[in-house]
Length: 322
Ligand code: UDP
Image: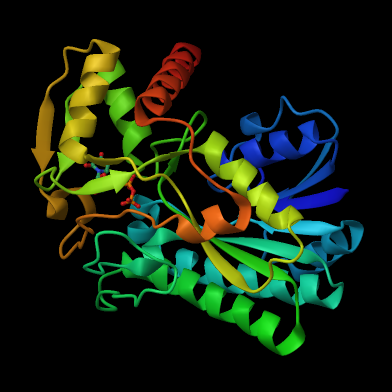
């Protein structure tokens, strides 16, 4: 098949392209290289890469016409970036998805859109189920513009399915990690790995008791492909992630141990890390029952395996940078 991956030069996108090529598909990438990097896909031969934005409707239309199915990953992501550039976040995430939906519907191309566990907001539940209520913070707290933009994407996609029978699937990715993820936009594991390898303090935000579940990109990507290939699934939202929960304090300790680093932990107040009035969520864990029932999904890669892979990748990058 001919497959378009928007955001294909990003961390998750590049792993998806690799998987699709290994399955024998012809892959097209649309990426504006804002947070994605060409190095992420330069090892992939037989790939067509268009450097442009999903906001460019003509380019989107030409590419969508060329292909059979579309994976839409392009978005402004990373808490640090979202907080610093809320206009860019809102416009890219809403208008970009709007354009992709319009064009894929015009040519009836099956579409998978990546949403995010952020849409659950600061809901009090320990485990988030797809049908749970969402609790999003006040509009002057810019962090929430990312969740709100992705919620609109979800509403619009589900409306396209309901009103036009446009075949679209939504996935809510929980913290996804693995090689090639950069810490530049705030992601915690590559940040801690880099700090530990450089012998710097590991910057744990808040009290460090907040928890997350990290999923390996090698678990997440095949699940996305399987959902795309299961054509009977349309107009549905699925969590994808892992259930192994860890506090940020423990995460920092584990990374220090696994890198045999002399680094210590430095606790940084949220205000200092992200500016005044920042709200973090205490816990975030996916309910995976729905995706398990649909495609038999079960994450197979443990947190320690993920950490070792990211540490090794960071080590190699640091060597290259020197
Ligand atoms: N975090 C941290 N130190 C850092 C970067 C992040 O303690 O240098 C924390 C952050 O406050 C959050 C968790 O790690 O509680 C995960 O952050 P990330 O940005 O990776 O993803 P999020 O779950 O916030 O989308």
